[in-house]
Image: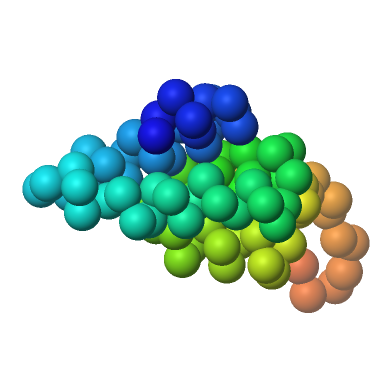
Length: 101
């Protein structure tokens, strides 16, 4: 299953491997993994790969989480984590750094 997922992309393969390793018995993960691989019938490889990367980033290691990411279009969003808006608003209620010293 991992080699099948590698044909979709490295993040999908990593997600499938993580799901398999998270179970006490690997056989318990087969249905989830097959569900993930079948999502390729409904979504493109690129979307499935981006959704898998997002699922790994947020620790959402399940078929249901991946399907929700795809159905809600979260895989299409730009990754804005870590980006800070450096715009400073000039307003009379905004206190400067001198206020706190």
